[in-house]
Image (cartoon, rainbow, N blue to C red; front, side, top):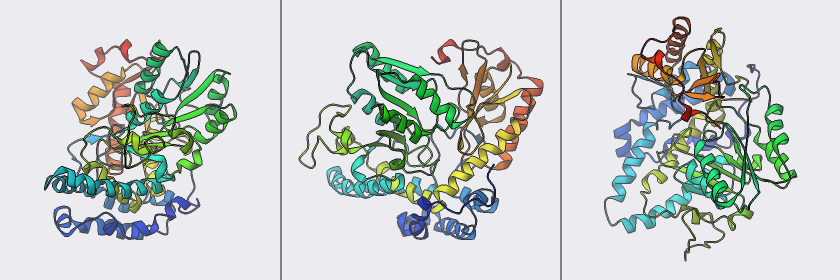
Length: 468
């Protein structure tokens, strides 16, 4: 548990001070847009930020008056409790209105004319993204999601028969499937190391990879934050370990950008993919691919060789952005999402998300029949956590929570052939209230004490949901 004497805002957050102060201008709020969305609400956020500017991020995370102001920036329905923000996060109103504004703009004339202008504007957005994640604009490509970003790498890295790719039992199934395709087609070997639930320390997590590396290991696929339980991995330590053995590292950062305050350059990974429509709350269908400069030429685009007169298609990250005709409106509105994120403060936001997770996880973790599969230590997790109840199938629990209480969670999950570890994933967000989390806890405690009613009690583990 952190103390209230924790150091003030991080260096990364201080770099955004000017952007926060000029939020209304940076977000591109026109007079017409202000009429639609209410610029006063964002002036309220700026005023609220000023009110907590003397607090550490840890202290600000517990200032309910401040977060009450932030909640007003979202248009979410209060007729339900959405604890499935890990799928995609709702956009704040300023982002939604920006998408609409850019769509109207692109529909007002020849699309070709709009595209010429939009390409220049996307360059500006890319510079903002590079500042956000701590990289060079020449090392990133704007793509549609984490899957597109990482499959570009996993299918593009040169591997031969017998070469090993090391990952874990908690890495995303779509990425694992891509590697399994290469196992069948090219004869590579896939190694999935088991991860304890919950892990006890960062040393333990590093040791998983250290013990699994062999002379044939050529690539490591590593989740920055696992999508299963929200376990944070010591990425820099594992990258250093891998590089000492001449191994490249690709990081699945689907849940890290916008949730954790960090710089990719500090991780020293070779490749990094993320979905901006998750914790950054950018428009749906926006993502990012990062790649060290020295790897760009050897990784071909997933859709084949690309040629262009506008840039060097061999050495430019822009070759990964060519997927045919797309709507530029979501890409342009990434800028508003970044401005909103920076207005709140990256470290302040991270601490609030962690506080929300710990609010419910620490309470439920005290119940004898409830298992929380995610550590609550600050360096080990942030907002995502997995929770299960002994003797209750997680899919039945998920459906009961939704059907009977309108509490949305992620689908049930099992680990192990005996189904001994089973949980649902809980992911609140900035707009989530403490009272909503308290109600969720009350429902879970009632289930643990009295069991789940029929027909939910008749659910049985589905072998298709077992992990390798």
